[in-house]
Image (cartoon, rainbow, N blue to C red; front, side, top):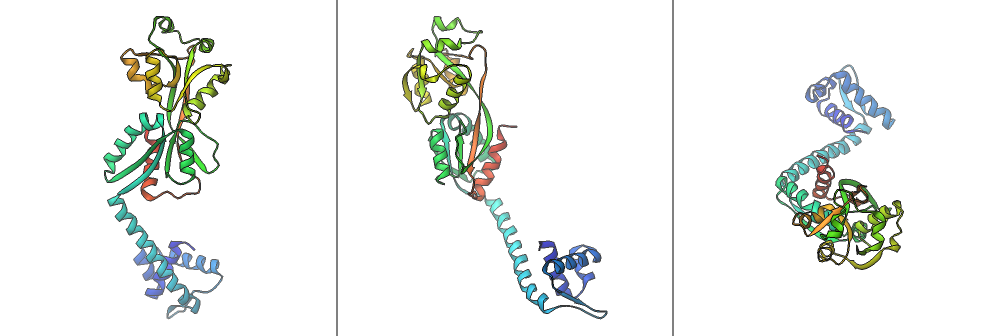
Length: 300
């Protein structure tokens, strides 16, 4: 049964006429007849008795009529409720975001979204990619943003932005020689390396890229593992070592000459940033609106 069949059926019962039902629904009489006939075939029972003098519901038709009216009323109530909701659009969305999408991509997205929906608020938990997945999996957050794709059967990943990873070094003469050339990949083994923590998407993607380039991450002289991207950049600017981070995170420090940024041997390392939700969780209406908005925002 579909709504068009039920609607035609209810109007025929109430008007006792196929032609009048068609007029009220702005449909032809043959179309009304077709809807009734297909409904009867589906239910395998006669619903409308039609003679040369009158049209009326059969006993089965009388039974169906009450249910059909309730179903049509429920549809109308649902439409009205959604219309009211769309006009109001208020509430709070729980979001979990890893460092790079959370600090450098989410602010612009939220600003644009709230210009359109000013009454929607956000509860944002900033953490690493692994914990973002855990929060979405446990339904502690409705929507998540990560810097890598972690194997999680209960999550749906969708690319929402593109990010570039660069090696950052102190602004010292021995590193300036690589400006315009790219940083030699093998030289990374000779430097003190600063790294994000194990749950970080930046770290996972960096290690994957290094393996593709023939470098075993275990051979790096890693001196520090830290949760904060900002802390790593500060350490690099003070000359403590080098790191691989998102270019978005380093732009201000580079602009003021505190660090240098390079590709590896002029090889551009790019990664996808992901928008995630629970596979089996139906998002709240406002969260669904935000999810649909976010997945296309950086594609414009």
